[in-house]
Amino acid sequence: MSNKINRLLLTGAAGGLGRVLRRRVADMANIVRVSDVAALGDAAACEELMRCDLGDFAGMLALLDGVDAVVHLGGMSTDGPFEPILNANIRGAFNLYEGARIKGVKRIVFASSNHVVGFHKQTDRLDATAATRPDGNYGVSKAFGESLSSFYFDRYGIETVCMRIGSSFPRPIDHRMMSTWLSYDDLTELIRCALFAPTVGHTIVYAASDNMPSWWDNRHAAHLGWTPKDSSEPFRTEVEATVPRLDPTDPAAMYQGGQFVKLGPFPPK
Image 1 (cartoon, rainbow, N blue to C red):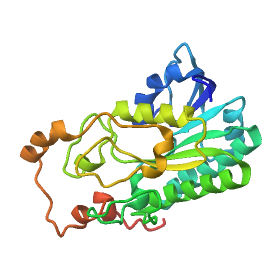
Image 2: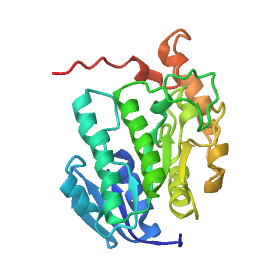
Image 3: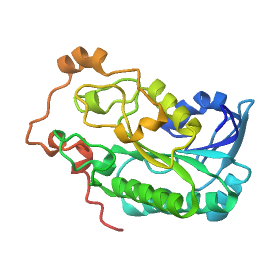
């Protein structure tokens, strides 16, 4: 691909990471179409604003019209009852990929999650071949999205980089995040690599900075050319001094999903 996309779609642009990335992807495209179900504020010079419910297929088709690539952050980002996750993360993911097939979009960067593998132990080291072990409805929905993107590559040639995002915040705030933290700069560079690598096929990449200890091995994503530059280590002294450690028998301390493995259940209403 070239070093600039003509029209890039950024979904979930009103969310936490969406607000951060909205200005950071501006130099990756001539036009950035930003979308969310929530209000988006004023458009920057290079932006097109389109509100859309991901569960609305007709709305999704309009959203994808004229788009060359997608950074898909849209959807529910926490665990909770199934129905909202069904609409935003499962139906929304299907609408995105089926819409991309119809509209001829050939590259998607999909915000997956570490919660796809949340029931692996923190003592495990995982690569892209590790079995999915979701830790809740949210993790299940992201596992669905990964499977869907794999199918749409095998059947229709739509390339996807599935970013299994760890914890992307300004700084790590607890012991778990010392392994899962992803700086905004490293996330931005990962998206750039995912958009502009010549060929990505269907790639799963663990999106974390160069942290120690590391739970994840990205050998199968080496073709992206992404090397994280930041690390949680500068924050270790503060975290160790101010954040109590969990009891080692607490499931949140045993499993990679942390507190997510303890959420719920969420009975249907």
